[in-house]
Image 1 (cartoon, rainbow, N blue to C red):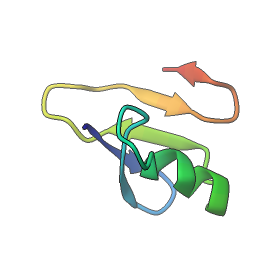
Image 2: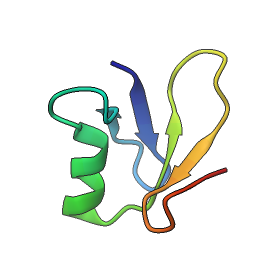
Image 3: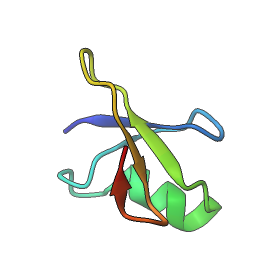
Image 4: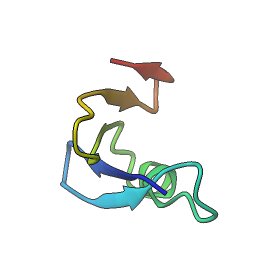
Length: 54
């Protein structure tokens, strides 16, 4: 399990490798489109709308 942080509101949720996929569920419920990895040493963003890594 890896944590993702919503850039809109700061919500922390688990990644798609976890059973509940909290980060994706947060996007579905609130529509906040971009998350960043909360893992040490990782510096990337993911846009749910565009399915694009940045």
